[in-house]
Image 1 (cartoon, each protein chain N blue to C red):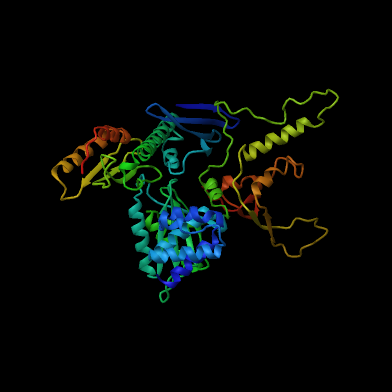
Image 2 (cartoon, rainbow over the protein chains, first blue to last red):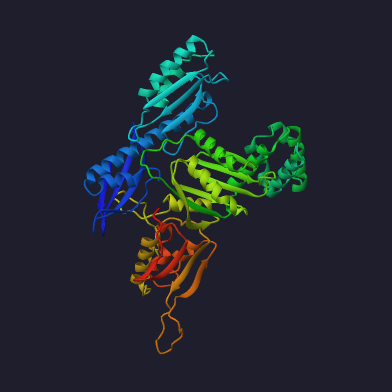
Length: 182
Length: 346
């Protein structure tokens, strides 16, 4: 949600974020209203394209500005939450650590469907091309070219799965069925 | 194992406080737990390092592995180096998709295309910080492992933290490699330097305490109005003044801890203003003067100036603007009124 409070020289907004019922971070934005609307200070992560969004909407449509900003922030924390959950609950099934970045819009990792095996036959690359979306726009899941047919089919199924389901939930769904694709 | 590698490991271990050596070697992960068990970490450091070198010999350590230990050491003790902040800029406005492997590849390729004799190591941390260690050589000599530059970069941000080495001449090459690897266009040094890497990050990433007014309930302020014994004969003479100072200080500095800077430097190029009858300076040119404030913790000491009665509140904005302007080096020239020179917009 977004709340605002009038200040001496303008307005201070607080944007709170959540992902699927879990409250996450809150961010502040202190705006001045005279002589024109400008950003005085803020607590947004530096990798959120604030200046870009401000250039487009701040002067003309504050509501839209806040809505777009809120979308960016909520999507970011949503992506981050999924990556953190994956790292926390399925670390046995992931080779090493997840390769990610500050915006969590590219995830690359090798994984397995069960935690019992020592190999990680699947390679996944999830690209989140839409900054306002917490689901990937491009999913590539591959396995070795000489892998058995069953593995290749699983890879295909997962390509589809990761594109429409939260990452940690997707892992829950195929990990509990206990397939050992070894 | 190369003798130079052995010596390098030995010296690196010697730098580590004795109580931390085992933990750091475990973080390094190059020696097995079983091997570490054979070392007596209570003996004098000289002997510990000799034992460690011996074990590294068994595992045939090379310079790349030794370099990892150095990164770990510098990551835990970053305040032993001086860090400068650089800001990159780009033309396009597309959302960046930062690919770590791509970044590393491009960085190494760019650096190595200009200088073959470099040792480059990367290490990523959970807070998305990418640490890069570069040991510089010359076209004719091997990399000198004792002359290293460190770079800390958080993906998809325009800021790079660099602890340069003595070889300042390599800085342009390093900057170029960073720009190319991170898909930016330009890079320039900011006027912000400190030993405290984390404080520099706090300043440019705006993680220092800023007082935002909001409707969210703040934790109850425990000020000096705890229930004291109310003896009505005791009266606070200047309580309103005290409150005014507290309010102004809080507005200027916020509630939380300040980023840690060791100094602020103001280069004055302003005209000396004196009584014309005194005629102190014949030539009408700017009076050049350098004012440097230093402190183990500059911003905390500035914050305490007014409350302790050593300065009037409000403090000069030249002092209070430091975290917001993300600079601690200023040039003050003669303008309409006293304003800091060039502004760097964070």
